[in-house]
Structures are given as structure tokens and as C-alpha cells.
Image (cartoon, rainbow, N blue to C red):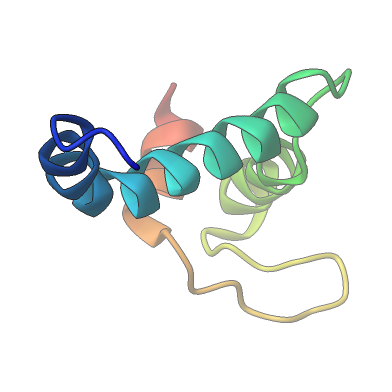
Length: 80
């Protein structure tokens, strides 16, 4: 026969199980990214586009495409 005292504890802890599982999954995925050496592609794109802003006045990729994501941040990076 099962212990009747353990049943309320299991029912009380059950809503937390999906949250704990999600946190463990996110920690596992984050550990894959943290171990990667070098800059992330975002930093390289920011460097290229801040130079383009200095040369052309607009965040234009070397392919000629206007990069419209994070424009205020790109201009602040150019000022820095």
C-alpha cells in the first residue's frame, strides 16, 4: 500500500515539473552557445555595418542590401 503522506507532496510538486524541465533544457542549450569561441555573427554584422554607416551614412551590407534591424543600436555602435 502506498504511503498516504507522499501523495499530497507529489500533487503539490507536479505543477513545477514543466517549469523545471524547461529551465534544464534552456540551461543545456545555453551551455552549447557559451562554449563557442569567437564573436557571435551579430557582433561581426554590427562591425561591418558600423563601418558602412561611417562610409555611406546608412547601414548597407556589402551586398548592397539595406539592413533595417536594430538601426538605433547600429548608429550608437558607430558613434562608439
